[in-house]
Length: 286
Ligand SMILES: O=C(O)CCC(=O)C(=O)O
Image (cartoon, rainbow, N blue to C red; front, side, top):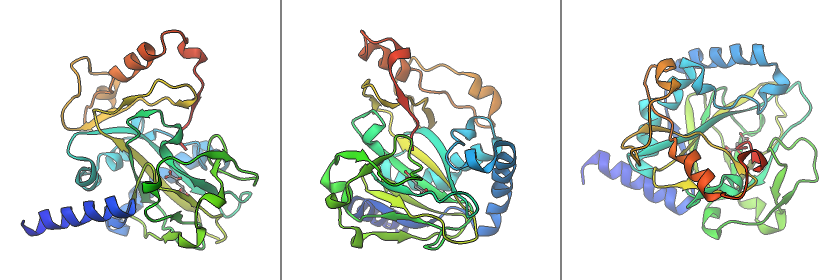
């Protein structure tokens, strides 16, 4: 095994054992400035309140955010874990402000409401501002992905940024085992879709913004279940899973034309023959 193959192997073994990998440098902190400026621009248009979790799939409109989700280093590290054929399910900014009402992210497993069959996904969380204990960095329970999917109830505490206020009861996990995922700007963590994670409120005087990128592989299909996220995945690297994928408007807007996986919506309809698409309630991914 050569040195690069050995590093790759170690990263994958560590990820499979612990359910996460951190820190992974995507770019030096100074290179992050131009991307942070783009987030600042989007935030100025959207407003802080809505920018906490409202900026979803911006890579479809902003060439600069597209550069992040298709960054060679991002794709290389995700490929180490999932293989070279990759679907980008979506991207989502999570931003906690010091001057808004306190917000946090409850303990949860990502794939619970993601409607993936099989429920396989990896999130890359890219630090835009720098994340530490004080400003509410992400916290992860090591090896928790091995316990399988846990029951999620509703949080009783105000300020949960998750879309349906889902929460794993604290009696089902050992909170003292949590690891703080502190990251400087331009660095990332990766976690398995089954890994339990969350984050505390931002108690600093600094913003804490991260861009989550959600990846899976082409053999994964929508489960067709109700009450799940409706994804419009993009085959961001590698082979197309089926022949029905056609080029779409994405190709015209983005520097690197890629087709969305149209077979997903086809399968979604086929697996819900009795339910109208409009009746299927959908969640946002967070
Ligand atoms: O940014 C955070 O604090 C939480 C992010 C998260 O829950 C996720 O990436 O799934």
